[in-house]
Length: 290
View 1: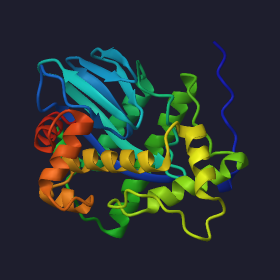
View 2: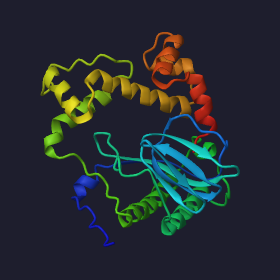
View 3: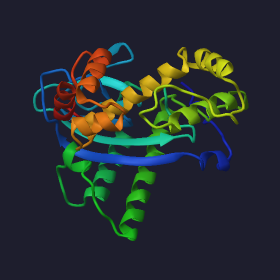
């Protein structure tokens, strides 16, 4: 199959991408033999170095055997690990200024990628020096760096990212470019919604906004199939999922940050949307993070 021509964009467009390198780890998974909760994951890739993994995402289940990689889209998924599974994993965020991911819908598949696996091993060695095993929890622990150490870390991830992009191009997967001019109003609307405080659930457009409330509702329905209020509700739920799993804050603190006056109201709201309580979700997500 002929290699697809890579998308060409001006350098000024590529410069607007924001990268956040979250982790690179290599080691055993924390819990095997049970399905995780439906948890939010960033973009990334993991290699199964031992055992096997099953992934449920996008309405399908994917088996990832030993020796293969799984490319993750930034969205919700569930996973199951066989006994003694060991992973080599990288997680990151790469987003356009409006908050959309460089790869929104093209991932969530398994493949053999020896060159990327080699580059990921080199990245692990660059970030973690002589360590042979670093768990997910260890990899995301807060750390301090000197200026030169931080620059070296960023450079190592950038070198890896170039191989990641080349690998996906070879697999026929292209990044999703920034929205075209006709989407400018939608971009403005989404940027405004994303900037609202998390405890604000009733959208009220500012007086100087370039479109009215009725037109804003129409644009959201056309583009996303939901209105302004539901967009905010989903955003708040996404943040709740992420913070419950990743943060050290108490559930009561998370509830207050999201605008709930009582932790019991937060629990009822979260259970209504997910089918489980925040504490049950935290236990499942933390114990099975990948």
